[in-house]
Image 1: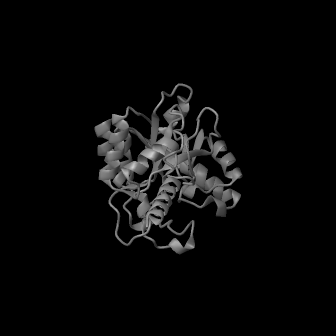
Image 2 (image 1 turned 135 degrees about the horizontal axis):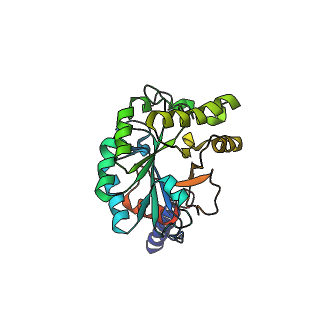
Image 3 (image 1 turned 90 degrees about the vertical axis):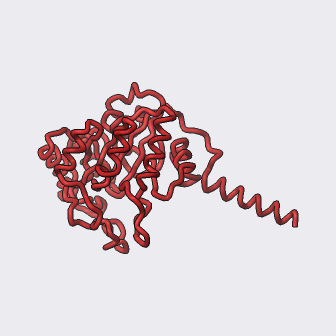
Length: 273
C-alpha cells in the first residue's frame, strides 16, 4: 500500500510539473510581458470559445496583481518606441477583434489602476462571423453574436487616453488563404480606413488567428506598420526580436491566478503552452 501511495504521489507530482512547469526559470524582467486578451465577460455555458472570455472579476484580479507588484503599463506602440529604455517589469495589455465589453467591462478596471491597452480592431466587425475562417468546423460558433464596438465607442476609448487602436485586417481574414491582392487590401485598407475614421496614426498590427506567411510580414511593413504581433506564446526582447513576429502571452478565461502568475514568469503555462 505504501509503495502504491508513493507511486501515485510521484505521478501527480510529475503531471503537475509538466502541466504547470513551476520549476522553469523566470524570464528576465527586463523583457516586457505582452498579454493577449479578447473578451472581458463571463463565460457562456455550452458555447465554444470560452477560453476567449475572461470574466471581469478575474481580469481585475490579474490587473490588481500587476499593479501591486509594481508593473509599468504601456501601449504596444509606446513599448516599441521606448524599447531601449523600458524599465524592468513593463507590461502591454492587448485585446483582439474589438468587442464591446472592452469598453463596458475592461476600461473601468484599466482606469482604476491606471493601466493602458492596445485594441486590435477589425474594420468590418459587425454582423460578421469569423468563427470558421480558421477551422470550418467552428462555423456559426457564436462570435458573430458577440456585441462589437461601434465607431463612437471606439472614440470614447481613445478619449480615455489609455487606449491605442491597432490594425487587425479589414474582415479578420485568414491571411494564409488569400491571394496577393486580397492580402494587400486586408492589411493596408484596414490601416487607411482606421486612420481616416478616427484621425489617428496606426502603427501596430496583429495577425488574425496568429496565421501569416513570411510574405505577409513584408506587406505589413510596406503598408506602414512598424511592428506586428503573433499568437506565438512567449516573452521577447524587443531590442533584438523580429519586429514583425512578436510573441504574446495568451490569457485564457480558464486561467487561475496561479496560472496567470506562471505565465507572467515564463510566458507559458507549462512545458509546451
